[in-house]
Image (cartoon, rainbow, N blue to C red; front, side, top):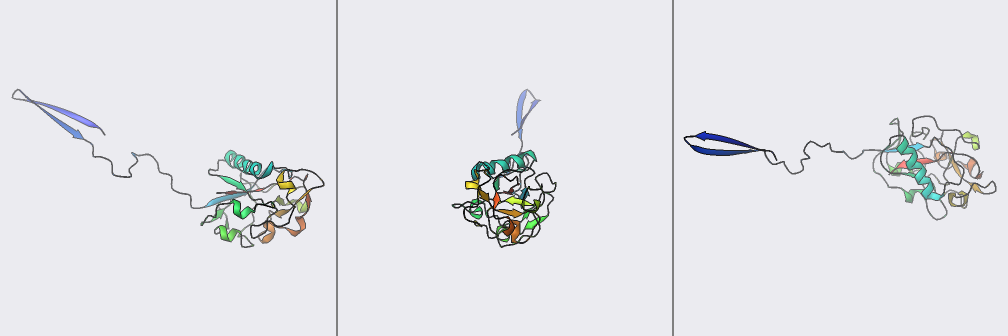
Length: 206
């Protein structure tokens, strides 16, 4: 609060007045910007491809965080992956608003729409807004997931040993970054890809 003192001299008397700025109203922020809550969440496919050895779910999440941060996307991101013990749907916040690509194209109206078997648009853009990178298997649009269109594991034991193996004799299931139907996350033609194959992953903002 700013205080201004005014000194008046009159007839040998000193009169002092203080002018005070009005106290701020409750909730005032003295001019500091207020961040409005986000009304949507970003989804992207990574511009980098990986073998099935993602250093587990935690390592995959870190890869999503790193990609998002480098692209200037705020918030927390997690990988869209399942294992025998953890489903992708249970790893993610069930946001009630829409999910967007980085160019603001809507891919789902809310989380329930994301896991109802189909999406509004393929997840075909990376964190940088470029086209999804080509995989080295399964029609070149494979994305590691082992997750069905309902957000649960799609194929038992097809998760590259909990996403820790790049072995040619161990397998992982994938989705298709060019698809809008259930194949976006569960492409039957991609259910047994050797874990040495290089494919991107999906990342979803929480």
